[in-house]
Length: 342
Ligand code: HPA
Ligand SMILES: [Zn+2]
Image (cartoon, rainbow, N blue to C red; front, side, top):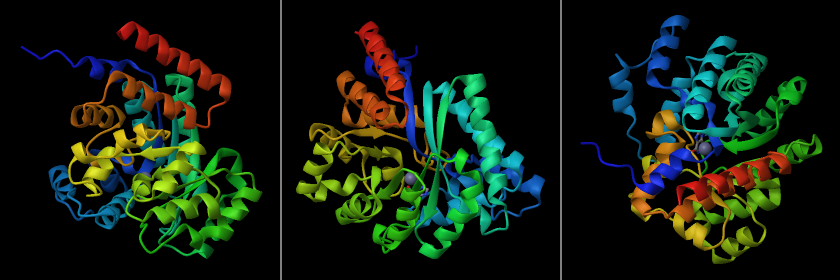
């Protein structure tokens, strides 16, 4: 006999959701990695899909990034970027995600000689199809790799200028330690001048001071991860007062040893401190689960209540870049489903 689903888990599955912290290159499942490698004549350092999965045991962010960049090397044609993005959109649909704001890392591809337009057109064509066929709205965020120089970021921004109509904002990702937001102050000023809103990874492995820098020096409207904010009580008060969203990624934190046990994750404390925190999947093909899997794992490990789950989902709509009327419409839908579930 199959066990009945926990009522809060049923609620998680039923609620409409949004995903705000998702690297499209991090949705590359080993099966697709192999298919694309074969098609594009790229040799992978693995004999089969099982070997790829077995390699996904990470000690820290860098040990993951080394594999993640190697995996992305199979993406070559516009069709490859389309297929990758479309596969994610179908998974998002099955998780009842209605709005996505996704990151892409152009430098990972342009450094291999792939034209930035190939990347952008492949992704945006799939996003448009997701809107037309699955009813999923989306935004696209161009991320700069922080282990590279600011000049490399500037050159990437210049290359992206013809495609600005397809880009809704900019972000900062990759190796955090030793690459503080301050390194990219001029680049983000230029982005602001172009009217591009900014987000930034900060306080994942790096110190709480990187979160403050991301806000004050880059003008970040959201902080990606941000879990280390709790090392600085005054910063927590600031984040709560200014309603700065934190796009938390619990299974990512577990896989990358930011926490050693999901039961010790500070997600609940962030909510209790009045922060606009929500759950996201980051690089789900590498970290063992998409959005619902993250929410279900947190519910089980932290014994989240129905009202905490509803808070997390409401925060994700609040923190999104949807127009206010759409936010209000989705929050009403969340309320309606929550009432039925009672
Ligand atoms: O979790 C992450 N942190 C920093 N850079 C990244 N690039 C993909 N995922 C991540
Ligand atoms: Zn991330």
